Amino acid sequence: MASTSSKPGVNLNILTVFFLLALCLPSGGGQKKKENLLSEKVEQMMEWSSRRSVIRMNGDKFRRFIKAPPRNYSVIVMFTALQPQRQCSVCRQANEEYQVLANSWRYSSAFSNKLFFTVVDYDEGADVFQQLNMNSAPTFMHFPAKGKPKRADTFDLQRIGFASEQLAKWIADRTDVQIRVFRPPNYSGTIALALLVSLVGGLLYLRRNNLEFIYNKTGWAMAALCVVFAMTSGQMWNHIRGPPYAHKNPQNGQVSYIHGSSQAQFVAESHIILLLNAAITMGMVLLNEAATSKGDVGKRRIICLVGLGLVVFFFSFLLSIFRSKYHGYPYSFLIK
Image (cartoon, rainbow, N blue to C red; front, side):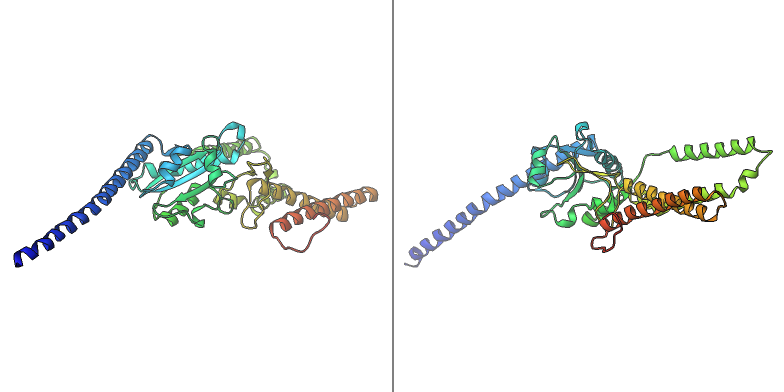
């Protein structure tokens, strides 16, 4: 009786084991399929990266290799509009810096399959722009290996600029991948300096018998003013941050020369500020000339009015630009 009653229990145990194995087999097969798919994606990305440092993506490639799981690598994407008919000069400038950064990573000893650089052009992936509700270019985004992109995964181009060094710092913050930027040699600065030294040396040689112009106070004053105008207009900030010359809205084609934030500026904006400061200075010089000269009274009056007009008008213009950047600034004069 005991042996007969134990058979149903043994059969039940065997059925339970087979049932558990049946449950495990599909999940194991799915995991294997997932690993194979990931391996294929990484292999394909590495192959593309070996051909060129920046991988071009269309809509299908973007959804398959960047958006769709599985993925164990991070991707930096530049959304841009490089076609000539788009007339996006900023896109071309940003693309040059992006290429420098991607090449620095591709040919560094730390290069691995954990980070890839890609680009999506509007004319090759307009559906991607629509999917991401993106209405401006260029834009840099980081797609992490796990999870969805966060707000900090979109590079603040307007505030920081698109210099390779700034992009590398942002990538290090988002991925912990350190990229040392290597720029191709540029001898234009050396050549320009050599030409300047040659020009000055030639001028001094030709005027070697009469060097009184070196003691010309007006000449030195003009040179000092040029340096002051360059520094106060933000040229050094441009050199460090590398901002775009201007910004063109791809939706309506409107070009902005003045940045709307107090934390950034365009190169064109610094040129405008330089000219405004120069005009105000010229007005002050004319006012001083009218007050100190001993010429005809009528001529001095005209000089005074011209100088006053320059100061008033261009200072009002300068104040309006300041007011547009520092929102909430209450004061204005003539021009709002």
